[in-house]
Every structure is written in C-alpha cells, then in structure tokens.
Length: 395
Image 1 (cartoon, rainbow, N blue to C red):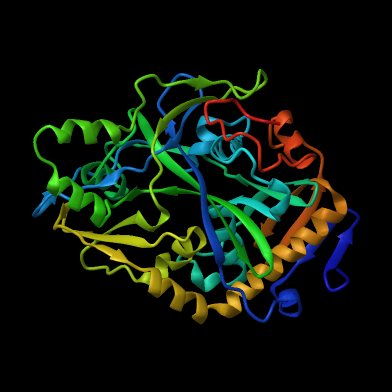
Image 2: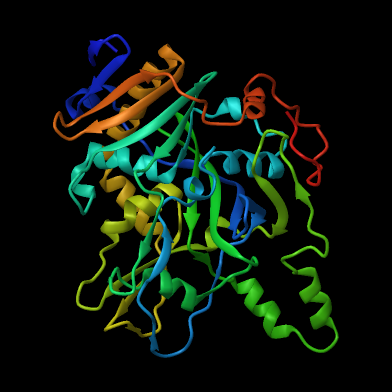
C-alpha cells in the first residue's frame, strides 16, 4: 500500500492515479449464480417473504394513460424497513435457501448501489449527474468485507403538487404482483470479477414469463387446469413464519417461488423526445447481470405498448469497451480490501469531492449484522447437512 497516501494512522486516501498500477490486465464477470431472493411485505414489523417473487411483466395492449408518481417512494427500502440491520435480510434469505453456503469464500458482500458509486468515482463520465459525495460502511469479518449503504434519506414523499415522472406508477400499471402485500423484490447473486468473489444484492423490477410457461398456458384445458394451477401456487396453504433468532426483529415468511435470473428485467421510463441510451443504464444492469430492459416512452403520461429487450449481448460489448474503468474499479476495491483487512473491524469509505479522492478511515461503531450471523465465518456448515428449508437458520 506504499503507493497510497497515508495521511494519519487509520486513514488512507486513494486517488484515480493510484489505481493504474493495481489494475489487472482484464476484468470480466464470470461464474454468475443466483443464490437467494426475498420480497419486503407491508407489515407493522420488518417482514420478508422468501424466496418471494418479482412482479410479472404484463403490458396491456395499446396506449395507456398512467398517473404521475406520488406518495411514499423508497430510495433504500432495506434501510427504511429494517434500519437496525439493512443487510440482515440478505443473509437470512441466503442461508434459508442455501444452508451450506460457505460465506468465507466471498471477498465482498455488497448492494449493487455501492459498486455503482465506486465505479462512478473511477469514471465520472459513466454517471449522468455530477459526482457527489458518498459514504459506504465496511465491516471486516475474517477476510470478507461487508459493504453497507449509508444514505442520507431512505425514502421520500412525493406531494400531489410535485412532478417526479411516471416510473413507479408505470411499474404498478404494467406488472402484476405475485406476492401479497409485496413492496419490492430483492435478489442475491454471486460472481467472480478480476480475481475477487462478490455477493451482490439488488432490486428487480419484474420478470417475463418464459416460452415454456406460455406454451403450457396455451395447452391447458378442462380438469388439468386446476391441478396445474395448484402446483404453481405462489403461496403455500400454510405459510410458516420463522424467527431467525431471539435477538432479531426480522420476521420471515416462506412464500413465493424462484424465477430464473435470465427472465428478470429493469424498467425505465422517459418522455418520448429524450431517448434513453443503453450506455446510461448499462453499468447498473451489468453489476446485477440483469439481462432484460424495458424502455418505455410517454407523451404526457400516455405510454404506447413498450417492448422487452434482451440486452445480454450488448452488456458483454459494454464490458469489453469499458475495460479501462472496470479494471480500475477492481483495483480500487482491492486497495480498499488491503487497508480494511489490515485494520480489521469497522471502517468507512467516503468520497470527498473537494479532494476528489476516496478516503478510507478506521472507525468504532456498532456491528452491521446481528451477532448470531458472524458465527458463519467461524465454522463452515458441511455440504451433507440436510437441506431442510422449513428449519430456522443453522449457525
């Protein structure tokens, strides 16, 4: 770390110029795996449904008038609904769906938003707005860095006299909720990038039914319709509610069904005379490996039927074109890991616009996760453990 500037004990500064010497020759996302998912449920206490299910894309034929966005909208729903530990749902759903998952194999656990912020520092031109200050909290456990979002606001209320576009209302009009009282679907994936292993959580706007489902629906007749619909039921007849630990305030329902990553999509709305270029959203889709995109254009809130695009190939091209930025992103994360692993405990990553540098600082604070989850780093659950999904959480 001698290339980095140590301003005082427990403080390191990283500039963009530092990154070139640390950057690998190539950094391509590989070994993408879907691991877990959940939905937030509207309830009086923090409640998630595992595995949950994204809303199903269901575009009505012809043009449709959509109301403008209003009321409560979430900026960071995990923090808004569970401020005690915004990352706890990630780990609870992960261990419920993968009881033997070896968390020690992961270098970085993070929300997509944190990687977007670090990438925007590395290459500000990828950000449509000016690069603003940001803070990411880090907890180092064994060799794993847990990155936690630190937002100034986790939700906002849009008044009836304000205009913030049509995005949220468009989603309500063009998708069908698959889990009762759902307020958002989150997914956890893993992949490798530049020699590092990542566990990434992100929100998904919806999914499209695959061709197999469409063919099956078309073939349904008579008596077998009820049988097949019952077998596809999203909600078990008796939904169990598991308490992860006596110290946790999070309630978990077993509800929903897993849909493939290949069917997930991101929805973007825009006024008709301002075309949305893929480069404006490519970084977001690339980080979460979201393969489908809906670009919906409107005239005064009237949307013609939009199409679902498969952008998988375009994202691979974007990844190749932006290797300079991506390899430096890897270099930045490796620099952060070297510092935080050396210190252990808690740190903060802060972008200082005045210095135009990332400042990593050792701090003292409450741990990011409930205490029982840290035992997962101490002993790996063997693979022959019974995959009992109705059980609570091992470890």
